[in-house]
Length: 177
View 1 (tube, rainbow, N blue to C red):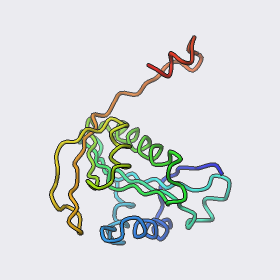
View 2 (view 1 turned 135 degrees about the vertical axis):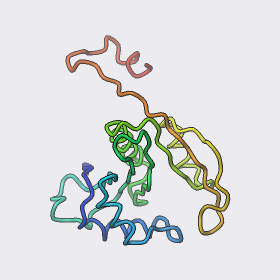
View 3 (view 1 turned 180 degrees about the horizontal axis):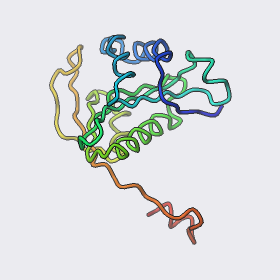
C-alpha cells in the first residue's frame, strides 16, 4: 500500500473522530471543536489515506491524521493533535505527518512549534525528541485521568536544500551530515 497525505476536508470529520476517540478515549476532542479546527484559516490538518484507492471517494479510509495551529506571521505554531491507527504504527507515518506539519509551520514563518505529550507515552516523546523537540516543563495532571503533560518546543530548522542536479559524492557522507 502507498500512503497519500492530503489536506483534511469536512467530509473527513467522521473518520477523524473515530480515530480520535479510539486513540484518546478520555481525552478525545469534541466533534464540534474538531470541526472548527478543520475549518480554521489558522489550522493545517492532514489525513493519511491509501494512495492506491480513490481517496476522494473514501473519506472513511483515513488511518492517520495530524493538525497544526499556526497563524501566519505569529512566529509560533502548536501541534494540536496527531494519531495513527494501531495497524499502521511503527512504519514511520507519525514521523512523516510531523515533518509535514513542521514544513507547514516553516512556510507560515513560525520560529517555534510547541506541543504537549502525555508523560506516560515514551514512544511519542522519543519521536518528538528525535525531531528536535526539547522538553520545557510539565503541566501537572493536564489530562483527564490525572496524567501529566510534558510541554515540548522545537526551534523550527531552516530547510536543507541543494540544486536538483547536485549529487553527493559519497552517499554515506550525505546521510551523516
